[in-house]
Amino acid sequence: MFLEKMLQSQGFGSRKHCQQLIKNGAVEINQTVVDSPKYKLDIDQLCFSVHGTTHQYREKVYIALNKPQNYECSHQATHHFSVFDFFDDILMNRGIQCVGRLDQDTTGLILLTDDGQFLQALTHPKKHVPKVYKMQTADPITDEQLLQLEQGVELRNENGVFAATQVVRLTEYELQMAIHQGVYHQVKRMLAAVGNKVEKLHRAQIGQLRLDHLAEGEWIYLSAEQVLAAKNLIEQELSII
Image (cartoon, rainbow, N blue to C red; front, side):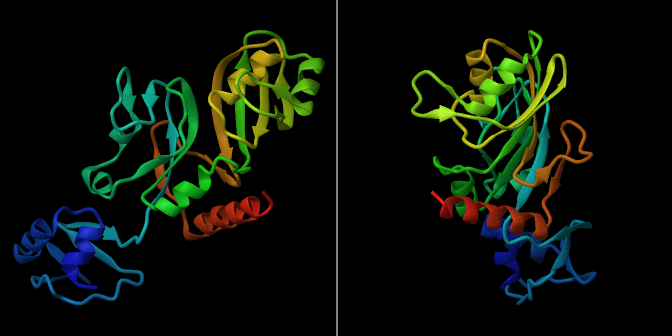
């Protein structure tokens, strides 16, 4: 791959801008300045630097973010901050998008990527990728409510019955459960359907992906193993529909 094309693919700007960076001596490969835009690269495990900052070549990016409250999963946030405020221009130039959404008042794991096929697969309307939520409720959680959530509830203007798995009462007012669909405000509506109300909502897990020790507002690149595991899960779930 030509150096100018590699830089453009990594979000460093237009082809013309990347050419200028190279000609100005801003780009180093193996700690050596390369000033030819047509310099041919082996992109396998490539590391390079621009203006002294080291970067790793990534064909596609897969990101896990711990979303705080009062952030919208939108490029054009209207009433709050945008989750895209956490990312620099280089990543934004790659066109990263949220994989699904979380409400502005919901915290926790959100995935972002510039891989269109991965995004479409995870947001497939018939997807069954489990998502684990922890929540605080307005009223004490009863045994009857736990049973109703496991057996399934009907939601207004939605077809079918919506059931939760891994339903665990953590404390009198704290509940954890997994859902396998993704309709609008599903968790909040399910709790309302059993006679309770969600006061705080946090997504802790998507498939096997967890937040681990990420603080609110922090993000990481997913490892190759994590991306492969997510893709395998998507293929398994879609194959049984």
